[in-house]
Amino acid sequence: MKLSVIMPVYNEADTIAEILQRVTDVPVNKEIVLVDDCSKDGTSDILKRLGHIPNLRVITHDVNGGKGAAVQTALRHVTGDIVVIQDADLEYDPNDYHKLIEPITSGQTKVVYGVRNLGTQKWYMALGNRFLTLITNLLYGVKLRDMETCYKTMAREVVQGMRLECRRFDVEAEITAKIVRRGYGIVEIPISYTARHEQKKLSPLDGWPAIRALLKYRFGRM
Image (cartoon, rainbow, N blue to C red):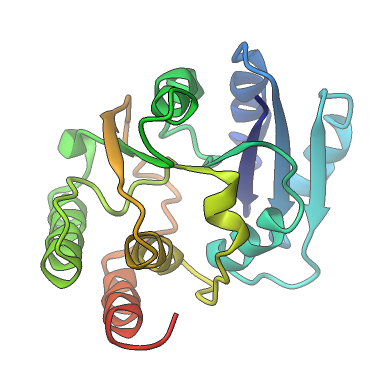
C-alpha cells in the first residue's frame, strides 16, 4: 500500500520546510506530489533546496490558478493506492494519516474525512464551515460533520474517475458532491487541528462559490 500525499502550495515560505519534514517523518510508504501554484514569496527557492526529500515530486504552475487547480494537477500525477490532501500551513497534523487510511485498508470504506474541532477558528469562520456542512447535508441527504476539511482521504479508484472543474476553495464542495453522487459513503474520523489566523487565504467570501458548487453538482451533470 502506498499513500499519495497531494499538497497545493501558494506563498508558504514560512511553513513549507516544516510541513514537508512532518509529512516525511510519518512512517508510511508514500509519495508527496506538491504543486507550487506560482508562489512569489520565496517558496519556490526553498523547494529547490529541499529537492533531496525522498519521493517528493514538485510541479510548478506558471500562473496562479487556486487550490482547486493545484489539486487537479496533482491528481494527474499520483501513483499511490490511497490519496490524501495536505495543506501546507501547519493547521493539520500528518501524524493522523494512519487513522485516516485504516478504514480504507481494512475494507470498511473508500473515503475518509478528518473531522476538525473548530474551537480555534474565529467565530465567523467556524460558523461558515458549519453552515456549508449543513447545506451539504440538506442537499445530498448525508450526515457529515465537517465537509470543508482539507483531510479528504480517498482510495485511488475514487479519484481516478473524478473530473474536477472548480479551481479555488470551492473544490472542497465539488469533491464532496461528486463522491456522494457516485454512491460512496464517507467515514469521518476526529483529527488534530489548530487554526491559523495570520496570512489566512480562505475568507468568508469563499463560502458563496462553495454554495454555488453544491447546487451545481446536486442538480446538474457531474
